[in-house]
Length: 398
Image (cartoon, rainbow, N blue to C red; front, top):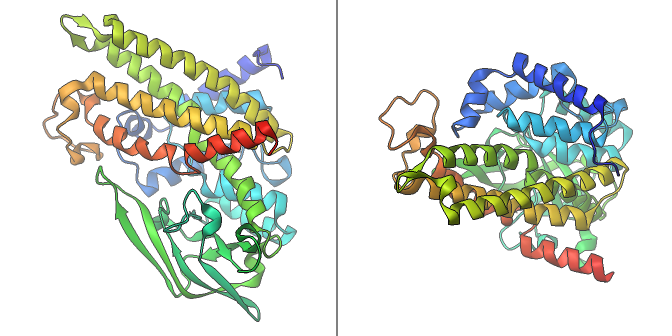
């Protein structure tokens, strides 16, 4: 593939920048840039703005509301949106479930669910991980027993991101206990308002309520909410994880965060000199920038493969590993740049409208929270250790 930007690509970049300048609310970009917490309403507002422009589902086929953009245009868009400090679009419906429905769902499911994802009618969350079935996802135990026109679901999911806001959950369930553990899994769409569902919050180290436990007790799910064939859910799950891992890598977000890091390093003084003149800090910055440029190329390769209908398992695993490690390194260097000012964590400083006395420079307030939060990136979506196994098997054709 050609990685050079054409004059048409550069013209598209200017179109995107003009759109962001005109339509991205300053209040939202300020919150993202300052590391403040986004509310559900904040995320829905940006979702609606992109949908009105017709740019929300830029990776979908045009017949279902996609843009018809090239791989390069999608890369430019994602990069410019991140560099403008726009909120990241919640990926569960748009970037994870939708590709599965488009490839494996029935026509009725596509016609019903895809428009509702676009207009924000449904807020989706992901029901994959369970206690004892995280990286070893195929060991899941949540069961779905067929009774007439319904499945009866019992079990528990955990680490359900933003499940407290969700109307719907796409869920891996066990429909057959015979044979290999991967062979008895099905893919169900479940209404979160169904009787028998309980959502319990999990408070994270930095105080956020971002993830949840979800319990299912005799939950009735219509048979028509089965995606694809019964017991074929593992195939759909792997296809979805390719898109999740690419999203987790967060190339654009890393580029924006790295630019912030360089700016803080230029203005933070240590021993009478800016951090950019500290040999050790400068060397780490340079190494990180090289790794980030390499990751951008890998990201384009993965997008190109996905754009041609392929599921680039090994490539997306590489991207997930490097992307998450780079984001962790960025937050680590940001914490080091803040020095002692990263230690006094004031959770209220991450809320909009905080007018208390800052401790150190304003940008130091979220550094500890961001450092702790990004530790999870190398675990969810399939731990980086598991991703290395996937890469090894692909290379050795095992």
